[in-house]
Image 1 (cartoon, protein in one colour):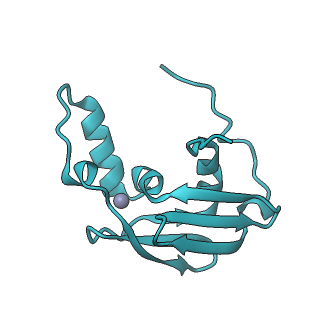
Image 2 (cartoon, protein in one colour):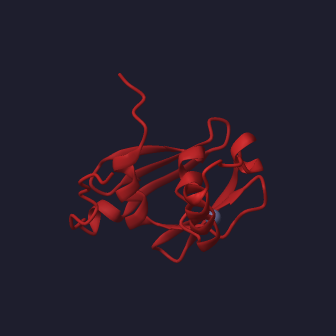
Image 3 (cartoon, rainbow, N blue to C red):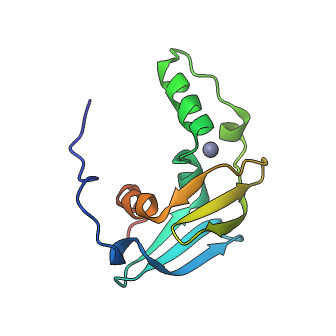
Length: 122
Ligand SMILES: [Zn+2]
């Protein structure tokens, strides 16, 4: 099962430069407004699922090899975003309610992830 992806389409510097960054704790949504005028809302659960850190990538790969997947606590209990801060001027580091904070989401990654955002209809 492979799907055609357009991930490697070159993104301009503008498209990967946020002009607004807001973590809405109550809604558990990260809202990014990009320099080209587009706004995206990233649900916390979506971001956690796409955590780019080595530990999460390994966990994900191990689960996909398991015939009878065992849910880890982070999957049965929703993990909340508790904070975040900029890393240099190229990335956002998010902190989670389970203490996880090694995921560094660079803005190019976030802009690419926008294509995978769940549609909320409307
Ligand atoms: Zn992670």
